[in-house]
Length: 128
Image 1 (cartoon, rainbow, N blue to C red):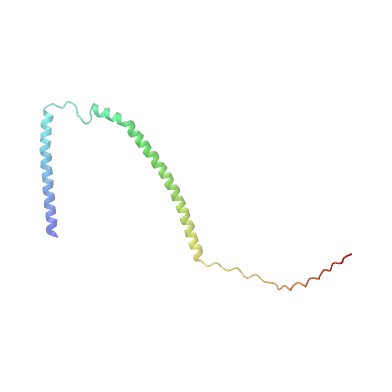
Image 2: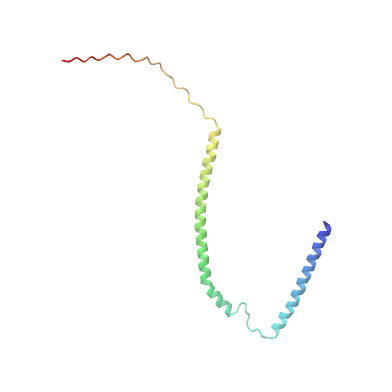
């Protein structure tokens, strides 16, 4: 295991040395090109760069506005869903807690004895 670690460290060192050597060599070439005087204006941040940026600002602002609007709508919908979920969670937890405690039974109601009703008197209809 230690041999593998040493090999990895040595390979990493070799890669670092190669990268430094190549960057120094390319730096020497660019400094010679700058001394020639061929470049009068930087290509990165010159007039053309500002022109390209000015053309890209309006679509970029539109895209940023659309993305912001969509994220705002998504946030509102997510918060609504989160609120409903929290309410359901609170109701479920309170129901579980309420069912875990035994409810006291109400005292039995006193029942009074009632005698049976007397038999009805038959009605006799006479024809007049």
